[in-house]
Length: 551
Image 1 (tube, helix red, strand yellow):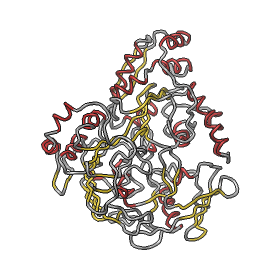
Image 2 (cartoon, rainbow, N blue to C red):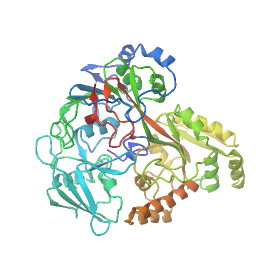
Image 3 (tube, one colour):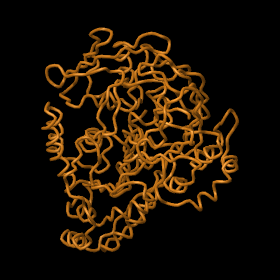
Image 4 (cartoon, rainbow, N blue to C red):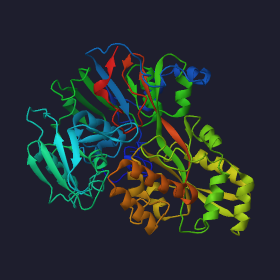
């Protein structure tokens, strides 16, 4: 995959940006359910009974919204689960190093494994790596592999790991995890034995395990170059793949973490949300990925399907370019922080499916500065700051796009809030196909979103002078030096204190006005059990179909 774009969810900023991929909005007319084309018209027909439910359902939270929300009971073995995702069309690939969409990440997770993955708090958790430890300084790490096997029965080895990372780092290829692996000196790294890899780094890096868990950093067999019939080490084995239509896998009985409960898993493609939810209502699939808040609210009490909310999955923000007028004046940035009514933005732009932010990324994640006071709307002080900055009649342009849920709505709500502080906001709607690239260099003020990733990754990818996705143009050498100090600090308590210092500064004068954190929403049939609701999208327990079963 390419570096996460701000709206992409397994990737970055931008979503999957990292952490972050943005599902495609491609038309679903070419998708396939059970081998036949599944169009939006057929989806609507299949779910014709849904209209009344959408109109009549209540708004309160019902069953299926918290941890364990997909139902309990003793796991059963057997059955075939069909999962509907937005897709990427005929150009889709099973190469796990290329994916950029949620469906790519879910397919890769079914077939392959990484050395580590992120828990709900964005700490790295061991996967193919049994353990890791620094040797000497923080510029050399030794990783011990667990005993795992490829689907053809061969063992996973240190040579496979080095081959995979060197493939990702190929300067002639645009693989998603390439930037994340940059700290590793792959020429100097070596296999100590079949189950031990010694990674040499270009500099001290206390949070090196984040690299092992990076989005797209999957381990493939040494020499693998074609993925039309991939051999992985994941919980499922390849059966068939029709790009833009369907993907079928079956249980791998020798999976190192235990065989999946399901006999088979099929991913089907439905680009439009209405097609996915109506396929679920019509019984053509048992799992529908990426539902909008309105749909979720309508069905939480309907009883026909379960709604699972993955809390705190996406940061919602406005980004101010700190090197361009008027936002090069710290007083103007603080005024905009004070203009925002965050609760109104969450209610209006996210239909209440989220929680308020405090102008910092990573709420609930490791190192998040919980102790800072929650910023509240204060229009009187905002007007005073703008007068002091010579901008008592300020006009700004806010760039937005329908590229992400709630962006146009958030822009309109903030426009009204700003007017009450004497600020005129002009809304410019950008091209959804180029929006994430456009906002990196163009304009001064824009709607922004990011998927889950460690706070360290957010800083390194977006807030350093040489960061490639620095949408706020926050460039301060002393801030860069503080990041390097953190990564050279072995003691976690000291690192925590340094991260708190970093976040206090961003809270006071940074360029991200973080107004909320959105839920990621999926729907399941009532027979589906084991879908986790306590992990953000793109983390370890998201799309864990190996732990799902059919009641």
